[in-house]
Image (tube, rainbow, N blue to C red; front, top):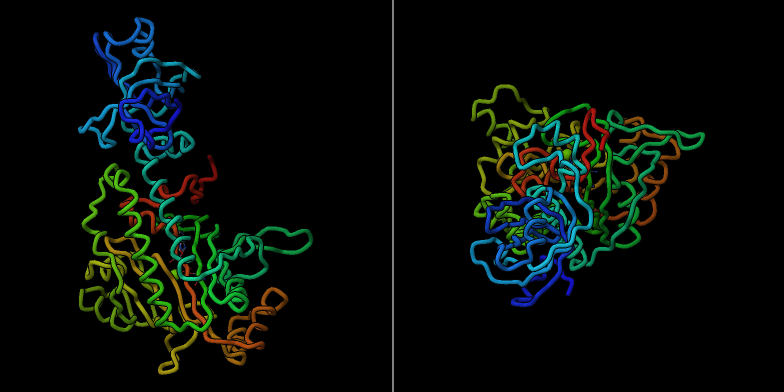
Length: 430
Ligand code: 4AD
Ligand code: MG
């Protein structure tokens, strides 16, 4: 009977056949151990010379790494393996014998691995990261569906820039100019006025010339937008969302977190509420810590974010940034119009900003004034201003960067390993 590695637990003492690849192998004169993988997981196949035909034993000893196989054997318990089961092999059928595989169990340099990303994805660690990524996506849909959100898909080709014009990817749209979306937010605001609570999940693009372990050129963002929700309501939604995702990964990715050697004790107490600190207090805190390279009005760099994060064992909201260093659509605080009703959520352990969000300007006249200050005009922006004319309401939203969230939860040093095929500065292949 054909099955998959994640299902062997339901076939104890039965003989099953698994379509798989040879991940690794060890053998002696009397026994061969085949490390098999099939996408759903990893299992060891044991081939004792005494229990199989001469032909099967000889074949098992000569199999090359990544050869595709149908392996047949009896499922038995094995308390030493992370899976808890192994396969007592009775038959091996080669589908395709792999040529010399470039990625051996030895260490390889980063550039080499990145050039072979199409193969590197098969490794145990990369497999585990992709499974964590998938669980974050799955639990994101689960959370927002439970909370009554409707999934809405904003366009990728746009005429407008939501997050400033310096990092836009330009393309021709027949005779017009167009850009790859930096954020779906402006469209999500329109959708929130139609559907109340909405969220999007899609690729976004930033032509950032920065080469850091936190920046991708193409990354995936989850962008919820909520009518009748103010800044504080939004912070509450954010902390509940992030808690749900972390707890889901802890519950459903135990094997993967073990493979990644993630210290899960640091994730267990990630539960709402999260601490909040104002921008003003954050600046003061940094000065007290001895940072003399930052003043009121500056944006935080990675070392600043890390220093702030280290003061807490949960993600921390930095709120009320100066209006000048934030996007044009953010609502000024009525009590102090120099600062915006906004927050960045900083992940613990130095993983940096994972969410940016704010309450949006809902007043037509104020938005018009912002348009003038930011020189926004033309058909790409007219429609967005119009939203403030027809039943405008208080509304808020935020964007969570998927890859930075994967990096944090999986405990991955560099963001390039958190997306199947990263687009980085100077890297378009594979
Ligand atoms: O803070 P950002 O630029 O916010 C927005 O785009 C808003 N329009 C979102 C909204 O309110 N709907 O980006 C949001 C998040 C950041 O916190 C970060 O996690 C991630 O997107 N991000 C990046 N991730 C990887 N590589 C990059 N170059 C990123 N730029 C932003
Ligand atoms: Mg931001």
